[in-house]
Image 1 (spheres, rainbow, N blue to C red):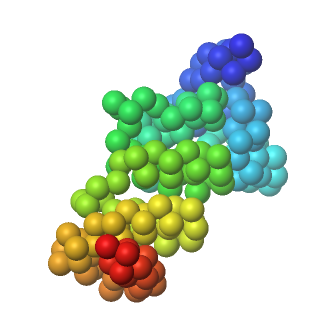
Image 2 (image 1 turned 180 degrees about the horizontal axis):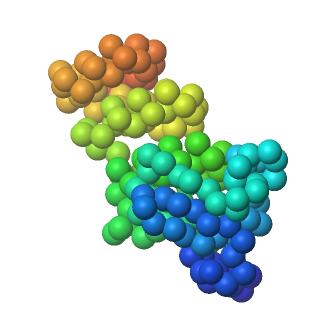
Length: 183
């Protein structure tokens, strides 16, 4: 199938026309695949950015493994298997998808995060959802937090979240109180 055929070119130097430097390693890639999924990468590769003349993209502040997951998604439309992609990796992948404006990947990450939410990471999820003003992400994280409010409210991570993002705390509490009245 077509998607499988394209996926075979991921990290392959066959017909590659751009190199991506990340975490002191170089990955061959294909401009058409990058530009098809990311308006940011398209601009970098087609306008007066240095990447369009050097055919080289330098990526900072991300590990090779996370960028490799990002690239595999661009070529296949799939995030890695659950066994090798946990909350931390999905969170970093979400941030990369936001940076490069890959909305389909952002949506996939939110879906995966919704399956991985715990009391230990819900405040981190809320922080990201509010920082990047992602309404769907906010709703999922707020619902989870409201469902676990009695356990969450005394925690230091909750107190810090409310201090940094008071709107998140307020909206979670709005979701929590109707639940209490029904129960």
